[in-house]
Length: 630
Ligand code: COA
Ligand code: AMP
Image (cartoon, rainbow, N blue to C red):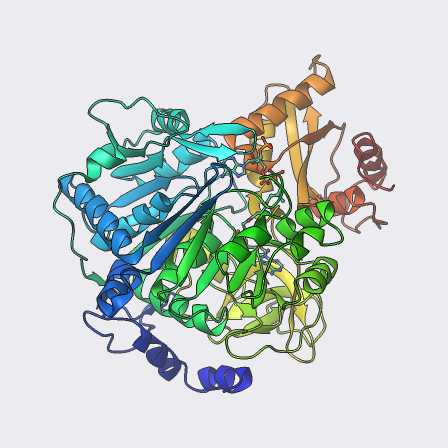
């Protein structure tokens, strides 16, 4: 079958399509139907089934004779180690950790925060939760204590599983003090913490609260897989919205299993026994879907890479890992390839390795610029596939379905919508726009299985953020267009979210921090184009009357504040003091106009601006920090 038949088949009979896809899952009680639409526009999938994610990702492969196959390979250039975990070992480790959690009172439905670097134990911790029906929430290691505290406060975990340390080039990330500080900051306190002590740093444990990973596992009754309902939350993953309060995206168990199982084969062309490498982090949705769950549900081997594309130690490391571990499908962010290309423009490192097993490279997380794709295709000599999705969707909305057929590529487009997604471009009134016209990208409801059914304890916010603006549709927050052949083009965000090195960040959250500085009266943050990272945040501050501190001192302080409150991942390094900010007559700051000025574009003052002269002031201020016309 070709893509078109499959997509049309889904459109003609979505229920039949998803019930067929559901056959790839081992059910304890099979679903009686796929879609549950009683509470539309809130939809659920396979709600009346009983199932267990860990069984499907681990145990069933051991039962099927894959016990000795590697489930995980930890490729860690930053610690100079490579280590494999077989499916049998994975099952045993996970059952022990899950047993430890049960013994300490963690039950089905309780939340567990996981704050760990790229080590196999992070995936084991996720699976241990899945085994007993606990709801995990993984927090990315590049976030500061304050961000961790916000998540503890919101999802109220019974336990936190962390590592003693992470390793970034040139420095150790001290997870344990960050964890202690976050618990201190939060009014909710977990009952206990489990700490995986790494060789590079042994943390001091707090007696009565903290347990070391190994002793926690030791001597407990290994846990069996606990059946959960199809609509039981598998996890909560926080993502940036327009304010400082992140959104807790919920993923339901059954839809997650069905969607990942379908995509691993049909998009990434991965079967049981294949090697799949996603160079991202378990703290992001890409890591949840295609480092942890997707490859394991398929019975494949997943590579967990602890390192960077460049500098650990060189721009050839990705190719070495692909060669040594016989990677068949490889997934990374465009920014990683840009970083490699900058150091190895002629692809000399690539030629040093045997990449004969590699069939395709997948890119997502931000817009893939055609130049980077062309460079990668030229040197890697395999299809380089851009695909578009988001934390909320949990799996690709638009892609080139390599496992079905390779469709003609159009540079700048992540190709066509996947089954389950009826993607439309709408005008401000919610009317579909003709081919080629730029508008808001929306998806006709219901969204398919595996996508978000809501936000953690915030149904109103869910409706307001995604469902209200265009009734009958899910609002993606992305703007773009669809061409005459149905190819989707993603051009920008419609909200105040920016994308820095494939990391989704809220300018609103940074503005709140800038505005909290004692000398700052008002602040704005924009995303300015950056050759390597796609975008970089740039701050503007109006100072309070009477502020006498030198401006560069204030800039230094706010840069430090953002790092301390959000974390190094925000990459907030530039800010300027201005007298005024450009606003509409109704008082809305014209961030998009400021971003255009920062990018050196010619800007026509919008009709709604209260005073066009301010744009020149902004241009001058940006010039002092290296932005604007060059
Ligand atoms: N824990 C702690 N700190 C982290 C971290 C983690 N897991 N990940 C990143 N950071 C820190 C970095 O050390 C850096 O700190 P610094 O300011 O002290 O140097 C800061 O956060 C910014 O990191 P990053 O954006 O990764 O920039 P970089 O300059 O270190 O590296 C790239 C640039 C392009 C190599 C890197 O961004 C990259 O590999 N990006 C791929 C992103 C990706 O996979 N995204 C997933 C979406 S699919
Ligand atoms: P996240 O939720 O962190 O995965 O970020 C999702 C956002 O990243 C999307 O809404 C887009 O703005 C952007 N994005 C992800 N993949 C792509 C892509 N292939 N092309 C363009 N933008 C993308």
